[in-house]
Length: 400
Image (cartoon, rainbow, N blue to C red):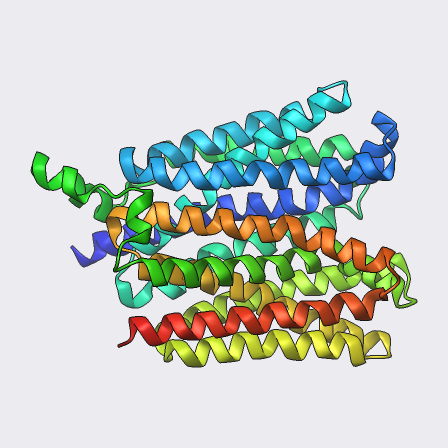
């Protein structure tokens, strides 16, 4: 039985990791393909900004609905469907011939990806015992920076220099993974357990959106929402603007791209280590470590003068800010009961995506207003402090 459970967990986390790698590829894809898309469609900077936003906007309805439907009809079915939607509309990106249709397919691809993420978190968490959920979600979610780093390297090759190839890669990879999901991915045992109850008990066990706001879950939901919102705001400021912040500080574009690579590589390591610590340490210690690490990295970015110091600062921020996102997803899987776990993580992810959309916009406005890179980095610090406070309040409540 133990051997079967271990195989179940390994297969589940491995397949979810592959989907997270694909998400990482997509996160980098728009930025890497931006110059080619601008030229192909004749876009100005404003239209290019709308193109960036379309994919992120699609994540919102996807995250809201994906987890909710997965709580109703099963994790595996919804994950396969959402991955297929993402694959199809990512491929459509290279075939459309107008700006409006480009926005539509990016929005729909984002919706597919947005629906997949809360299910990945839920499946990884439910594949293992509660004592190992932080590690499982961390191992799964480190696929995101791995995918982003891989595409950053591909972008330096002849293949990656053609913008259509980036989307061919992003669309074909999930089509390869889908058969693996169909034949190898097991359904969540915790979900199946709820389905094996009697009809009355099953009806009672199926949660709804309003259950996130009952007396047991309201405080947890509010803390998760605030932390997701402000943390993802900072995450996407770094993901979107780090190379540009380097050029603002007087470094070259190539040096900025190198910093982004270091950021992603260290993010992979940080996500795994923080996920493991979540299971082994007191939760409050993990929160203090990861948010303290982000603050140290942001301060280092502002204070560093040499290129080597800047690379180290970028790596420090990457390790903790992306790792922090993985830990927050793990916390979401821990604080909600099985019947509303997908819904809770999905809605929290959607709230986080609002922060993800606003972060790059706020950073852009600060740069336009003359605050410079130092102003953008400084503006991220209060967001991190607010997130840390609400996560510590949440931990204090659940550990009482």
